[in-house]
Image 1: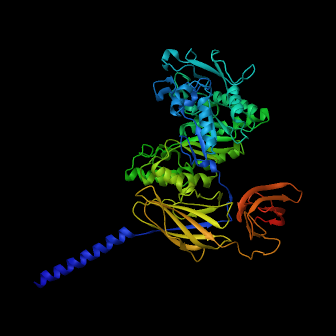
Image 2: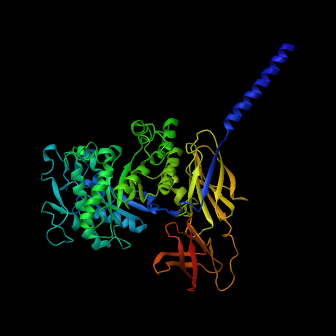
Image 3: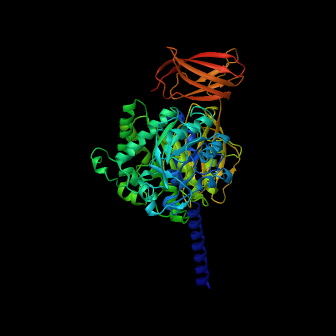
Length: 618
């Protein structure tokens, strides 16, 4: 019996220890340290990164009308050709897809007009794709057979410039469509790009490296570097002649093989000894063409970026695919990351956005960056929401100008957008001014940070936990002249797409800890005291801090709202102007030169206050 009792006792101890070890493993935390510096890397975040390709996503700040159909779009009749996506069919798909009433299918430019009306209704920036491959659909009679490959009666020829007068009632029998006349039509109905309702930008067609495979009846031969540069510069010249305020996006490349050598372009050998990849050749070519006409012809370098690791784009939600989905966003920026794909195997480190910036700086400085198609999928899984957060945060972090997701924005992907655009269900959004932050372990967790131009007392932090099994114990260190006292926490978990608000908590310093559950993300809104110092209670009710300033200036009123701020250098030149409706705000001064400035602050009650300000960048 004694032996049995001893065995039972030993077994009990063993099971207790095993339970403890299992519990310890299940609850083990990952410690990640984050540093936030509200005075470093201060710059505006483009609102256009919160964009979409599909209607209707009304929260989008920008929308794009693009895709394969637009290559063969005939604006005069709204016919388009599907290419290999659907039997090379020329038909009414575009107006049908935009829910245009059938009686209006043939109305001039009804596809563009419907799209722009939607953009204006929801105050969205509109990017329209303008055809450039040489031909557009001439009819809506269905499949174009191989023997009807362009040029044939099934196609109308694109001409950039009409030799005679432009009209709002184009000739439907001349076998031609004119790009300048299409822009004229839109300007006459909606105004130019500088107006509130006009088209803001035009994209130079869509995925030209794939024209031969996607549109074999329209452009049966591989595009060459020389052809694409000629078509791009000529159409861009027409756009700028018609509407100098409109931006030009190009070349809308489909992916990595196009970036490298324009999908094995027949004439790439003529360029490869001079340029490391096609993107550099394109940028330099457009710069040279711009110098010939003394006008910038390319405003925004436009690429598409789809994930290549197995299962990611297909929407696979297995553990392996979900982990790849959350991690592979790092290919946009992280030179230490090697993704599980042919790109990762042969071309790492990718670090796409820094690579694009380097090519721009060398070949066509001042060009902005757009990713007009991307999609990490996983709409029905938290990995899709986290990947979407990682993408939007990276666009803000890397200074992307425009980004529009391809395909539907719903489920967890929509929740990912909401973490930036509507985290409380009341329209509250991530800040519009980027500030520096970093994570000690980006494989486990990323951080994105911002402040608000309208309220300098608020700091926004969005943090992801990409670990399947373990919570992150987040140790946050904030370097700021503000002292943060209170924290609101909004949580996106793995169970459903609702963003939940946790209880408001107090923080007693700018260093604190937050626990983040496995497979989740949090949006922290930190509230600070007013900037250090006492607000004057006299006839000069504006407090400015710091002064001298470096990258970010805080203004606070002790009475009425601030309505306008103008800053002048000592020679009287305006260096900054902003309008507000707030008692507290922040101004990005990172691009100002060292020296003294005159700041004129207009209050909501009409009172004008003048102060001197010093800028000193260390």
